[in-house]
Length: 360
Image (tube, rainbow, N blue to C red; front, side, top):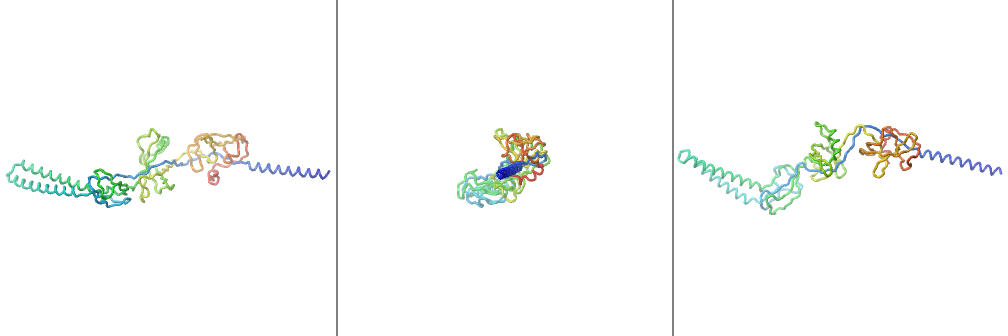
């Protein structure tokens, strides 16, 4: 009998010890980390889809009708201002020039002879004036013939890169027909659309004597090495989208950017006294953001918050939280509404400095 009582006591002691150990382990596992928002000046990066265009991008068209006799350049080639690119067959215009030159020479000789006679009072001043007018008309026709002949040569109006050819050598081209396009890529204009609210914020912080720098994220998710400057804002908003177009100018010394590319403008916007919390401390219900706020008794209450901006691992809170509030930092899936928890408070500055470490 004594042995039985001793065994029962031993079992009870072991059970009590085990339950106590499990209880302590459970309490240790359910100690959650809690923190508060931090208020500080920061900078957010707004992202805008953009269209990249050359600072000068023009069409080169035939100025006279004729056969495309020669092409002196190639597609994608860099050309200098004044460089000969295309030659439309000039035979007819050369003949017209020679004819006009001959008529101008004849009119000049006739005018000089008439002037000699007029100086000797042999012919009247009216005859001299008519000879002079005839000579002037011949010179004008010669100049016109020279212009037509020059039109058979298509030269680069500025330094640039040639686009794809729209015609081939030997083609019969009409007056005004598109030959190719030419792009000046020394600088690039990047257009992007900004919503009305963000435009108003921009104007509130912009200064007349300073220009805002922006950056360009290219299609390969790499940032273009040269910053751009916002130089122009269009006059009107688009009534359908509520956006207004900005234009930033980027230097392009290495020629990496080309006309027609796309990318994303990165505009850094300063925010004073921003209220910051970690993104991982929030959860979403029906497209709304919430946090678990801890009251004085240590009970969890879900609260909706408004997000003003987003940064890596961080939200800028516009409403729903105060700097003095305490929120659940992690373990959101392990708790329920109105549950009382054991927690450990972590200083906001410590949380912010270790977001990469804490990020889930």
